[in-house]
Length: 84
Image 1 (tube, rainbow, N blue to C red):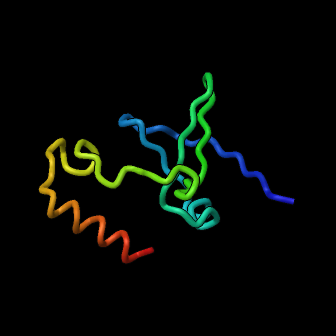
Image 2: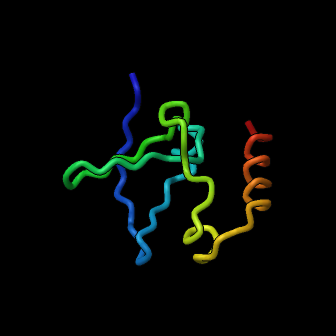
């Protein structure tokens, strides 16, 4: 039987939360899926095979709102492919 753990987490002024390292290790992923239904937020490990796509680069999140050169994006993608 699976163990269920419930924990109250503080949300920072920037809207961020911290997932405990034990939870991250247990799920063996560094990518999550966030699903909102009504007033319920569900966070689960992303299974990239399910969706087939995910955000590699978000200019606002990853580069202070600035775009990047195509060559740099290609380097990022190749680096990700090497990990898989």
